[in-house]
Amino acid sequence: MSKGAFVMLIPIVYSNGRQDLVKPFVLDRLIEDRKISSFRRAAGWVVIGRDPIRNSSHKVFSIPERRQAEVALID
Image (tube, rainbow, N blue to C red):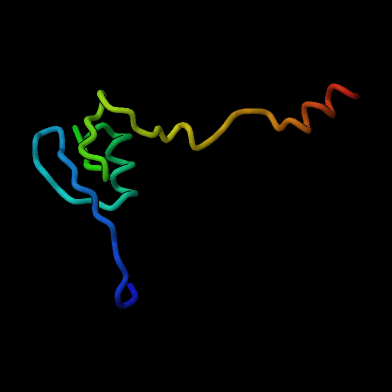
């Protein structure tokens, strides 16, 4: 890591009540694996299952490419 690099750590609470600080990519995995009960955002604490969170399934879209669909209709 270069000198002066900043690594953001996110406060979390595991399902068993234990607290920790994790990197963002670890937070995503813990949410997917349902191992945490809450984590802290800039706006405050987020409770899993109660508050809206991004879903990793939204990263990949299964919408057909529009131009390909138009070409198929023309043929």
